Image (tube, rainbow, N blue to C red):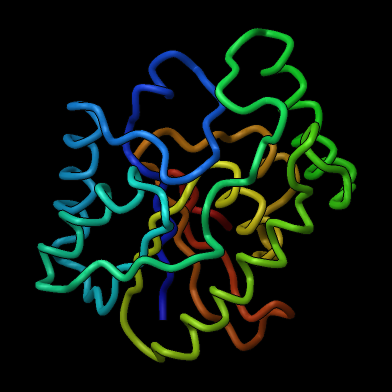
Amino acid sequence: MRLVLVRHGQTPSNVIGSLDSRPPGPPLTDLGREQAAAVAESLAGQPVVAVYASVAVRAQETAAPIAAAHQLDVQVVDGIHEAFVGDLECRNDPESIRAFFDVFHRWTRSLDLDVPMPGGESAQQVLDRFLPMVADIRARHEDGVVVLVSHGAAIRITSFALSPNVDAELADQHLLHNGARVVLEADSASPTGWRCLEWADVPVG
């Protein structure tokens, strides 16, 4: 079984560089819809058996064409939404962006998973809600490809936690653009049960 974690398409908040984590959030832009269609086209030949999306509008709109290409419904689930940024919500000033990355760097570089965003969530809180949903999805689907449309920071920290072959530098420095994906494969030989095959179109060894 493969799990394809897709970052949603572009939103107006992405255009202005705003930290936007609270659902339901804004819809996709025209470019965001094009990105969603491109993801759907790239996955059209894959044996997709289920498509999941977070409670955010942008995730559901990204998931819709992927599901339609396989005559599936989008299953909206809680727990896989973006890491809440708290006091930084809807801000795009340099100080706020720097504060966000300062915390994220501590999550990946120092494994300080209990450090929260200012007034927001810690990495551990994100993992405590995201990982059980991944486990539930794996229990539902033994074979095939499952697509899960989520959010940049949440996907990166979750993939880092699940994949022993994803190192801190990859999780920390390699951002996921809108419509990018991380591909995980179930692996019984892995201590976490997973390994990463691909990060934003780049194979992972």
